[in-house]
Image (cartoon, rainbow, N blue to C red; front, side, top):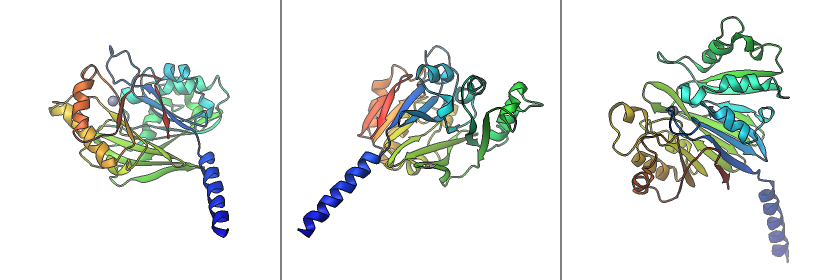
Length: 298
Ligand SMILES: [Zn+2]
């Protein structure tokens, strides 16, 4: 009798726990790279939590329109994560900030990105060069940095580190970051945990640091960038992972599924070849992203 009671209690509480899990959806806003002609917005992703557009990852050219089309709201955003500062990952940020003026967005919007090296400014510097009230390219938006605007952009630098660390914690959201190798460009991969669910973003990288497989260990969805085809060599292979490496990392990470994005003219139409390469190591589900595609995180 006691055992039955215990079992019923356990069942009751585990159902409650299941019920309490947030609804998390990954939406691809931009599935393309930097070139024109791919008919895709450049790199950008959105994480919806219980129907709210909460976390933005990258915001390349075209992402602003996709954000609108997706029905996302700036006022619901908590955090923006920049994997690196290349144009195809950041170009629409000024458009987002300006459009916030016409919304009820208020409070702090945290923006994380890499620290500097001799090739790139730090994320804080980057934001200041764009929006600083005295010297910024769009200095008329300076009120969004320590000013009177109701939405305040708060930039944070993530130092280059091959050991992952938690950079943000709020309620059931925990975001971790680690450095990845993108040639000479400081670049970060992120893992977003919401309760027990998680999505991990490679950003642009070639896999040399072997950090992503650890960051993304047992993640539900691993978003991987497919900027180069099977036989990529030289600079392309210094900057980006080949499909074989995508499969190796996904296998080591034991990822629940893989979403292939940052698709470019040199990889579009080669999905069969890409899949064969990935399948040499990884047996899980592989999806090829298009703009505005949604993936439920289970
Ligand atoms: Zn890119």
